[in-house]
Image (cartoon, rainbow, N blue to C red):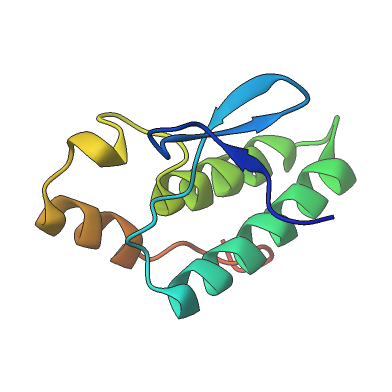
Length: 99
């Protein structure tokens, strides 16, 4: 499948013609992999919990992981200082099932 197309400035990925905020490239590879694993677990939990009392917690887990990766949140990663970026990705993100 390969990596998604990036915009020229590297801030967005383009999937099916739509722009999505890219993961902060400064996130260390090991932490990026960990956060991606956590994100995917929360996405599975959202599917499982849809329509139940646990859905909101599962969606909050997705949000926390995406913020840590720099894919959501304000200001965007390219407007943050190095210290703010580091603090963002180092923030603890609970794993699905442990929140």
